Amino acid sequence: MEKATVVYTGTLVTEGDKIYLKDIAVKSNFNNSLGKLFDCTTNYNTFLLEDGFEIYYSENGKEIFGKLLWDKNIKQWFIYNEKEDSYNDIKSKLIVSYNWDIVISDLSELELADEKSELKEVAGILKWLN
Image (cartoon, rainbow, N blue to C red; front, side):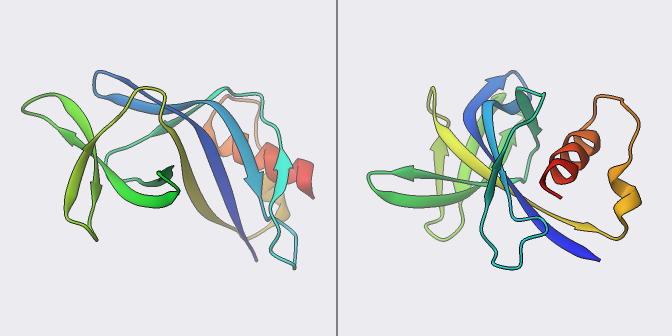
């Protein structure tokens, strides 16, 4: 069994109740005992995020962690920083990262159909790194 972290970094975009990363760069530490992150590419230009996903970004030289929150009443996305108990508006063209920790139990999991899906994307990235 292999553990891997895939880091998606891109521009945070909101469209109504949808939120995603655009123009992403992807790094992964798959199959690397040193834990270094490898640069890799993907055929997909966006990565869909969801309510509750923890993201991080830099602001004034400080790294900020927060969870994405959708307010149904005012129909707006926020970033909630639990440590500081603060809500931040999503700023235009904010560059953020999302870490996706995954477990690969068998290399056959990397052989997926050609359907366009998140799992296919990650499998393709990990297969490329292997």
